[in-house]
Amino acid sequence: MRGRSVSRMLSAVLIFQLGIGVLLVMGDMRGGPVPLPRFAPEAPRLDAPVRPGDQRRVFNPSRDRPAVRPARDPGTLPDRLTLFQDDGAWRLEGGIAEGDAERVIAQIDGAPAEIATLILQSPGGSVRDALEIGRHLRAKGIATQLLSGEFCYSACPYLLAGGVTRDIHPDASVGVHQHYFGENTLLPAFVAIEDIQRGQSEVMTFLDDMGIDPLVMRHALATPPDEIYVLLPEELERYGFVTTDEG
Image (cartoon, one colour):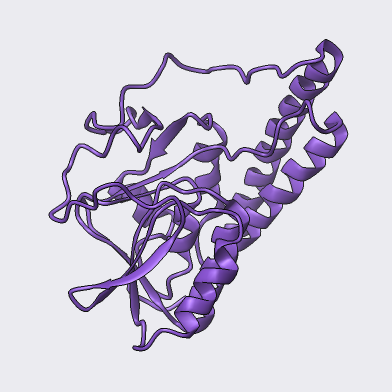
């Protein structure tokens, strides 16, 4: 069953990549970037409540937060991932910048107290750093958690997926979208397409290794980078994000 799902996902990714390829070639011919087509009217703001079938929101977490307010006000999140303790609980918060994986992994390994569970809150950022950290969390047997009203967007769900167990409050907000792969004006179209293929392959392999159904990527691929698709609690369960069993 999982094999058929992955096969369908690969077909969808191939179609997506071919479309991107056409746009990139057009951009090269015209000497400038070609914006991706929009498949729906502009989404509501992030603070609008999410309902089934109405899950895409404008992605501007520096301006908007999810409709459900957290018990703990995080203030302005740091630009780079920050590991710290809050009332005895370990938290990892902030944007995921390039190079954060090496720094954060060293901090996790050198923590003065054992980290059994990491509470996450991040608007996302560098995909490859998130994948590297996620794999390290799994190797260390660290669980991940999202609290009520807090959020995990873009590349952050790869940190979440790395948890040996994943505890997500029903009022937490998890969102996915297309990732940036560089400006097509800086690279030939065929090189940019190759980067997209490699990046999507790494993401899908990671999700499968973490026990997450790669079909969740269909929502990501259909949501432009300036919007976010907020997963419903039932979708988080369906795709395997919510788990109490190891693996």
